[in-house]
Image (cartoon, rainbow, N blue to C red; front, side, top):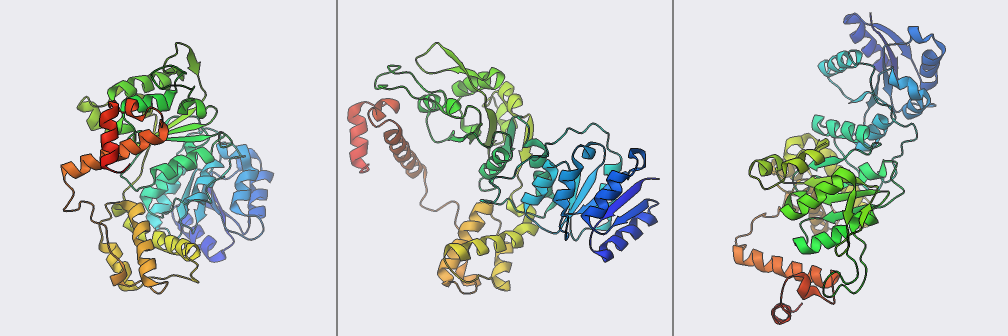
Length: 440
C-alpha cells in the first residue's frame, strides 16, 4: 500500500486530501508545516519513507521552496508534487528546477489529483538530478503566465531543460512569447552570467547574415576595412538565440549544421577554424516538418535542432488564461502610466473573450495599452477596445516589397555604413537613387 505525505498548513485542505486518498486505498500522513514535514522525511528509516509527497508552496515558517532545497538529492527517489494557487510560471519553473516531480494548481479536480498521483507513484527511479543552486535570475523582469494545462506543460519543460546544455527548439505563432522563453532558459541556466546573444534570421539577406553570424576578417571583401567578430563568438560561454529560424537560406542552413555538429566555423576571409562553447536555442513560427517535406529546410539540420522541443500554445487555445494575463498587463500599465489602479468592465472583458487573438499575447498587451490611454485611466469599456486588422485593404504586393526594400537598406546602412550598397548587392548609382527616392 503506497504511503502519501501531505504537507499543508490548511487543515481543511489536508483533511480533504486525506479522505480522498484513503477512499482510494492509500495510507496517509499529515504535516501542518514545512518543518514538521521535513522531520517526518529525514528522521525515518529510508525504507519507511513515504512514497509520494504533496507539498504546499505557501506556508508560514518554512516555505515549500525551502523544503525542496533542504531535501536535495532525496528528491531523486522521492517524488514531490507541489501545490500552488498562483498562475505565474516563475514558481512552477523554480520548483521543477529544484527537483519537484510535478505541480498542481488550486483549485484542482479530483480526477486530476488522482491521475497525477498514479503517474508519480509509477515513476521509475532514473530521474536526472537538478542542481539545488538553480537560479531564477531574470524571471522578475518578464513573467510567463498561465494556469491552463498547455502552459503547465511549458513550465515543466522549461524547468527540466533549463539547467542542461541541450539544444532547444521553440515553436509557436508570432506573439506567443518565444523570445521570452529563450531568455528564461538562459537566465535559469549555468550560463546566466555569460552573454545571451539574439539574432533575427529574417532581418538580413544571406550575404549579410553569414558575416553577422560568423564574422569576417579585415580585407575579406571590398569595404571590409576592419575585423568583425560574429555573433557566435560574441556568445562564447553563453547562449545564442536564433529567432525566425525558418527564414534561413539553404546556404546558411548548411553552415549552421556544421556549428551544431562540432561548434566550429571560419570567419569570412579566413581558413582558420574557430571553436566556441555556446548553447543554441532556436525559434520559428514556421512548420519546419512541412518545410522539410517540401525540401525547403534541411532534414539533418531539423533533427539536430529538434533535441528538446517546446511548443507554445496560441492564446485562443488557452483562453482560460485571458483573465490572468489581462490583470497582469493592467497592473503593469498602471505603474507605467502612473495611474493608481486600472480595471476593466465585464462587457469589455466579454469583448476580449470573443476575439480570436491572431497576434496572441503581444496583441493583447498592445490592445490593453491602447485602451488604457483612450480611457484616461478610468475603467475600460467596450468602446475603448479596438483590434488591429492583420491584413489591411491597402496592403498589396508592391507595397510589401517597397517596405521590405526600405527596411533592408536601413539595416545595411546601420551595419555597414561604408559599404552598404555592396552588402546589398547594388551598384552605387542604384543604391543612391533608392536612398534619395525614400529619403533614407
